[in-house]
Length: 342
Picture 1 (spheres, rainbow, N blue to C red):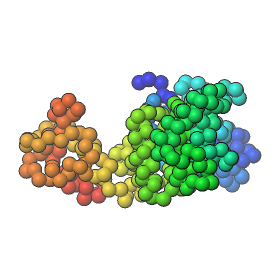
Picture 2: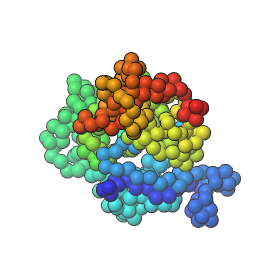
Picture 3: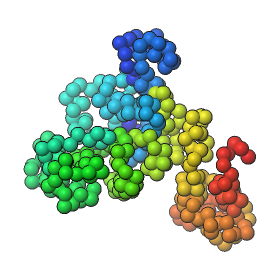
Picture 4: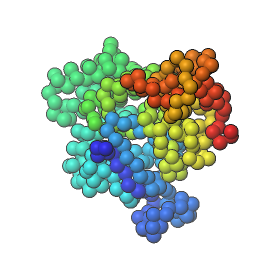
């Protein structure tokens, strides 16, 4: 395992005059209610996790759950009250201002829900702006910006001003601008939540396409569980500043760790989320002729499997048989509801 790109150890963010003293006295056991009675608000409560290179971690929760605060701590837009944060092995909280600016400028890209485009600059100039700050020649920065315009599908609008664009188009400019710098680490805070559903879906597809190509290390914040399931390698679900569960989408759907997480997963159509390998049997029972890949989404192969009399062989990328799946298991997964109800 190579070193994680982002590593958080017992990160706390508490707002209020006595925050540091109260955190010391609490000895790591922070009760949000007690803190509130003492005039403090707990934003992030003992968050520990790692994000590996090229991974997309989606942090989700309702508003006020602490997800944006966590992101702000990791980009050091706000200083954590306690704990340690490492970016590529560097201790973030020990960086001086110059080191921090360097890190942000060269390693991090950020996209927020309110994307502060410069109103007096065109789309192209907005996207080229961070490159020019880095000292890249105007001609090169404009060429790069034009590539980004194409990447996010705004060609023909590069000379518009922000006020002449729709919300979705402005959002694309924000995304293009943060990508122009070619950040290794990309922070996105509800980047699509202001968009109407159709454009939002397009942006998600576009985003997955970009990630396939660029392999960034990403922390993506959303309050939309469907969006999280669609985009995430792993999902962290937050409530009251605490990470309730951090796991793959499949494990969160199959094995919710808390009642709160279970509520989120209740409405999820499992066959759209789970892969064959999530529900297959490791052992081979008596199988028929049909084979399916372990990486198929259940929905795509369910019908084929259900027409079989016997169990179906499950194969890996090299066509080796790695398990089997029974038609009854598919029925159970799709219609059987909760795991703990059987």
